[in-house]
Length: 308
Image (cartoon, rainbow, N blue to C red; front, side, top):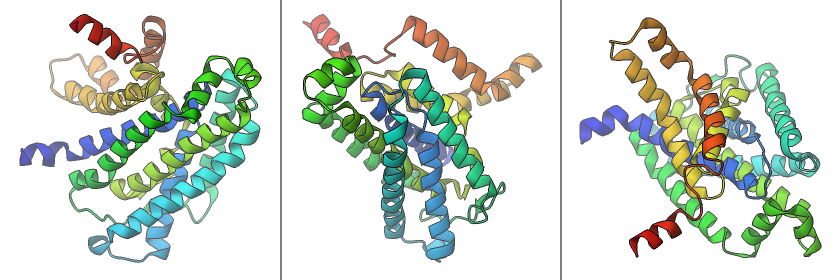
């Protein structure tokens, strides 16, 4: 068991972080908003943690205290949430593909800023970020409780007035407005909550990866996170969790498959480098055959009926 966790510890933590990133994209989808801004807030949270830990909180890598990481998570979440409100108020007047394009532009603007600012390290990025845990698997002490807490909060959110307002807006915004629900307020709220979660994940990831640069928040990342939600299931948070874990592990599985030998060289190279092509095909196939994703809200109801 020890050998297993030492070998796959980084992958397990990455899967948990992937599930959290899927949930950050799921939150605006609860109101029917196809936002691809999560990588931007994720990158922002990572840069905040990287800058604070290397320029403000000067601890050695071997003695970096956990409470400083928790403080960075709070700061990153607040900063991402405030930016989410600032971006969400004008951007969420758009709908559908236009909103997706606007949020992609937002991610690219942040990426260009990070490439040209000295404080972010430019194209090179920030290296030597202190790590509070020496063993990668120990990051589960932070990431796993955060995932569980987020799932519990989303479970409760879907069953209170705010969650019902989210669902009403997603199903029919005009009808929701006629019933006295303020669509703009709830859409900005969902967008900002997703931004807060993405910023917090970025702060954890910066320490986990030990380095941070502009490649963390790109259009490629937007497509990958979208795959998490669309294939996993966009109508329940369990789908985003499943999709985030499975599709975070998928590139590693494909890479190991390519390295086992016995495959033609072109196929092995495709499995190593064709991740985005594979994810794009999965989005197309999934939306055709599984329009609501692999996990749907009524899957457990059907299961109970079968058992009876």
